[in-house]
Amino acid sequence: LPALAAALGPGPFPGLCPFPGLCPGWSPRAVPARGRKSRHDPPAKSKAGRVKLPPPVDPEELLVVLERYRQHRLVLSALRYRHGPGMGMGLAKSRGSGQPPALLGMDVSPHPSDFSFLSGREERLRKEEEEQKRRKLEIAEKRARKMEAFLEEKEKEVLQLQEEAKNFITPENLEARIEECLDNPRNYNFAIDKDGRIVKRTVLS
Amino acid sequence: AFSAGSRLLRGCRGGHVVIRFALGGCTNRPFFRIVAANSKRARDGKYLEQLGCLDPLPNAHGEKVAGLNLERLRYWLGCGAQLSRPAEKLLGLAGFLPLHPMTVTGAERLRRRRQREQQPEAAPADGSAEPGTGT
Figure 1 (cartoon, chains in turn green, cyan):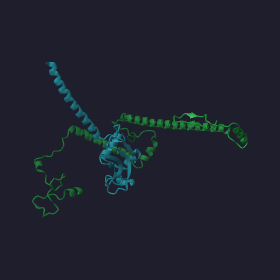
Figure 2 (figure 1 turned 60 degrees about the vertical axis):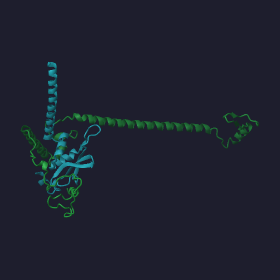
Figure 3 (figure 1 turned 30 degrees about the horizontal axis):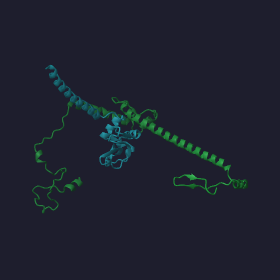
Figure 4 (figure 1 turned 90 degrees about the horizontal axis):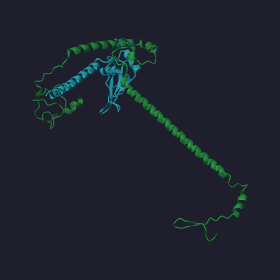
């Protein structure tokens, strides 16, 4: 409300200050400000003949509604008393934990106790949970398979290295290998032309 | 009756405990927290305990989701907390309390209005069909 008053500025008092010089806080607005009237503003001329009536009431419906309200309040006060301080503790323990709190323990009809319209949501949530579990399982399986493949490759490499290790040159067979190399001279010379053809037979050999 | 004698409501001087909706969220995106507070406090001010939440806008599946802490609700109701009207209606729809009378009345009115709308559609349709078959 104070924000509105600040936005609107002091309302124009008819007959009091026709000149802006007299009341420096007020100036005529080029565009009328859209806002609510304060309680000191007079009603508009278009509303002069307006007669305000209360909304129409159906007497039968009113009786029915009053009776419903009476019963509703009765039930509520009974529920409050039943679960009042000191009374709710013992009752909560005696009741089975697996049962849903059907109206705080009281059975009041008419109320839809079977929430069939909720089953769609619960099913959807359950399905989503199962989907998530399945996806997690799949991811875990994929990871396991990748690990297995990796391990297999590493094992193969290890075996290959072991195989090659038999051909290594060690201090024991050093002299034998040197003699072998000297006995079998290998020619590493080759020529290559622009088309990529390799020629092994050279002038030297 | 309860708030005078009950030791548990000693924190409320002059007011009474009320279970109501506190509005939060952003522009064009409301979000309600179901809250037990002193009735004299501001709507979004300090509360005693949060008992749940309500999202008034329907989600992608067309559901309006609410969460309720039934155990604590039961405690506060037993202490003698009052309920605001929308809180009563929500709890009635949830099944925790009996249905609010105005929920039932509103549903009846809607049903009657729909019947009245259907009958004029059926009546002019019959009225237009009969002269066609009669002539």
